[in-house]
Image 1 (cartoon, rainbow, N blue to C red):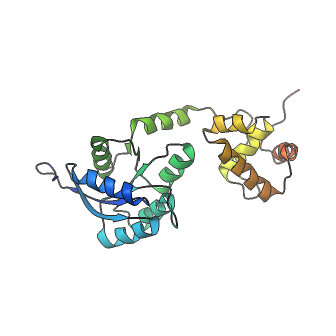
Image 2: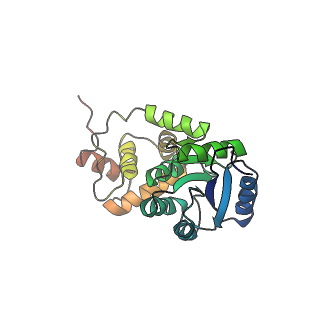
Image 3: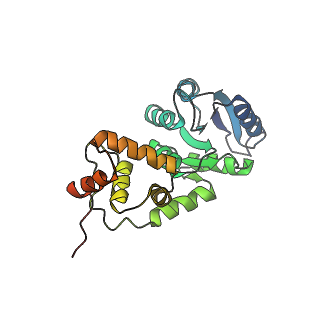
Length: 227
């Protein structure tokens, strides 16, 4: 469909590694007012090339893709082609997907159960300088912003090359939390927690949780309890 009177159609590139899904999104967008699909890509590398070639207004970006994922593609597009906005369109709404995408420069974030009107609204929002976030994503952001910092955290600065999230994990280990409790606190999966623990153990040379506790106290990441 075309845009409304006096309204220019937004030129959109669709990025998804699953052919059936990608073609379905293109077909849906073709029925929506104010949207013109100018290209489609199967991975992040191809997306970056298409943006350079077509200069679209908006990229609808999947996250989990081979070769170059959606976060890296978003980072490259925003750095190299700042006139193109990125709206994530993904199955995943967990923190480990949401926050890296937003930090990479995505201005919108929708899950794939979004309806046509919601997609159009997000595209129009990012083109006008606003954020194009689904209601569930807005709630998650508000929840995250309202969560208090752990009282025992002294610094989020990383030691031994630890990321901020790995530092958070070692602090929570020192507080005595199990992997399941850490997962609930950080709103991630237990498997993700295990990955962070393996990474921080590899970087620090730690062998077990007892050593992790000593490491957290020894590096000033947590304060000892007052007597």
